[in-house]
Amino acid sequence: MQTRLQEMKESALGQISQVTEAAQLQDLRVKYLGKKGELTELLRGMGSLSPEERPVVGQLVNEVREALESAFSAKQQAMEEAALHAKLSSQTVDVTLPGRPVPAGTMHPLSRIIEEIEDIFIGLGFEVAEGPEVEMDHFNFEMLNLPKDHPARDMQDTFYVTDEILMRTHTSPVQARTMLKKEGKTPVKIICPGKVYRRDDDDATHSHQFTQIEGLVIDKGIGMSDLKGILLTFARQMFGANQQIRLRPSFFPFTEPSAEVDLQCFNCGGHGCRVCKQTGWIEILGSGMVHPRVLEMAGYNPEEVSGFAFGMGVERIAMLKYGVEDIRHFYTNDVRFLRQFNRG
Image 1 (cartoon, rainbow, N blue to C red):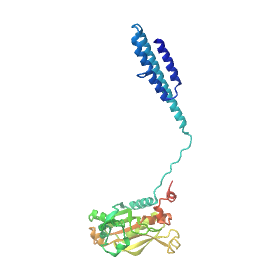
Image 2 (image 1 turned 90 degrees about the vertical axis):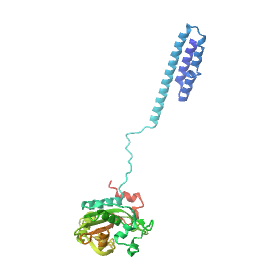
Image 3 (image 1 turned 180 degrees about the horizontal axis):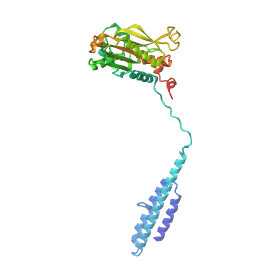
Image 4 (image 1 turned 180 degrees about the vertical axis):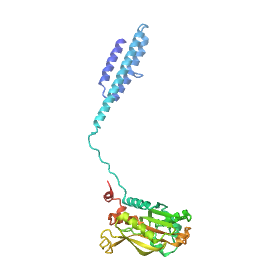
């Protein structure tokens, strides 16, 4: 039996050294060390040995088992290391190659304009106020001196959810909500940025959804001169230190008196050109003194306080500042257009 054990050991070690695949190695392990393997079969024959031979053969069996287990483990480790080395070799990364640049996005031009406008007015002491885009008719129209069936509502035809709920047509409801929260206290000095909705046909200068920023100031002794001073400061910080503005009489139900605000044409300096249609001026926003009726509905006494309000379209400001000829460029997500505004 000792001879058979030695022969089996040499045979097994020889076969282990020749194995190249993990499956073959496992088959050999089962063949020699498994429950029905050759070594187990030899152990079963130990009952026929004499008492003197059994200890000697038993020790030899243990030595053979340890030798084979050690050989299997060493071979398995060697095969795993070889496989890892081969995998690493096939997936080599040349760390000396320059990195591949990751394209970075940029702030949308409308977001940039909103941020610039907010910075200007915050610097003038204004606070930023926001409100819901799905608004109640009461705040969108009635609180702004536009009762039901008022003809001026036709200028702001919008999308209705119900008879009393709609997509807001301007950010003026935020002004009404803010005045109510103030409960007649002054001063009120806010700007209200946000999206608004109207049933306009989309073209180069109109969109069914656009962005507005409105402003409101209420305090004692507020006059048109304060309105003009604030808007002139805004125009000069946004479009250049030498800018001029003019106020033209207009009509808005929530202000009295009302005025359209024109900016001196930045293309011709006020001399007249194609951009300003030979007038020397470009309309940029609407404004006026807050109507006494609006003050009363919000809990203010128009005999004691006064105020002014203004509203501008962000797209309009962006088109003038950046020379964009079609409002739809802001919404089509053309990367070639947006990339122009990347400050690097």
